[in-house]
Length: 358
Image 1 (cartoon, rainbow, N blue to C red):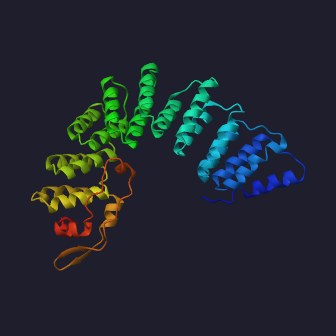
Image 2 (tube, one colour):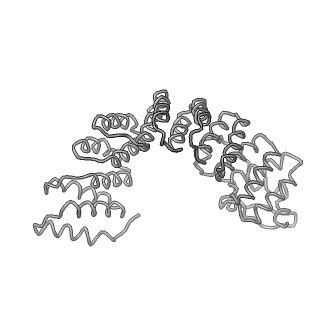
Image 3 (cartoon, one colour):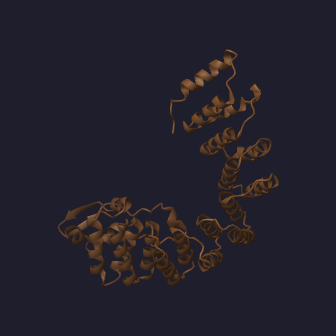
């Protein structure tokens, strides 16, 4: 996002330089941060490069601002240089953890693992964020066995580790296609009664559904609720998608009713799947009532509403818009591409006018 707010400050900075005055490190740090947040990343880097000319030694705050600048501008080619430079300053654990995570996100997992080793050599005591960064890096680097071993060592040695660490390893394994290992890790966490949050449970359910182990996913789903955790919109929509594919009417109705009770939005993709399901069965009237209630409660997602732009005709309702693929990251893990049937045709064929008129 562009902004002119730092312009006077940057102009004043240049005036100070031209008049022979030397801004101190605090002013430079603030300016780097402001320029970065304003989208003026090149100017922010220019200020950083000027520090050496004034014999100013960057501190952890400087490097944290520079790291933020690099990530915002997606100039990831600068990260290896930042790793080298950071080894000659007194960086703190917060900055090192942020750099470790950024290296993995920039698709530099091997460099991230090497940087972790450097952190340990420098005497840093890793915390939960350090371990999360390491596990992500190991998975991205394809060293999944090492990642699983590190995970087991961490959870058995550190008793204050929270649910996030389980989510990180399961997601990392899923991203590399290691569904069986992901399920194995999940079972280990559940068996040992480690703390799991809604995200961890949802990711675990995703792994089971992807492995076509629907019954186990349902068991885990029930356990999540028994533990007092509320399923998220992603949890509900993942479960519903699976039951639509399996044409399990009882479970479809159960999940829809739970979504209504919890006021959870129905995704556009699942709306489409339900319409297709009703076209292929003779039980669509019972589902139509649930969908009508969802409509009345305004729980149709924006995409679902966007798909449906109806004009009334003498013989019913005919849709105008074509079904568009829904860009929704939580589906990327478990969904394969379904039929490309036109949503508008499907909706019209099940008598959508009945629902609109109810």
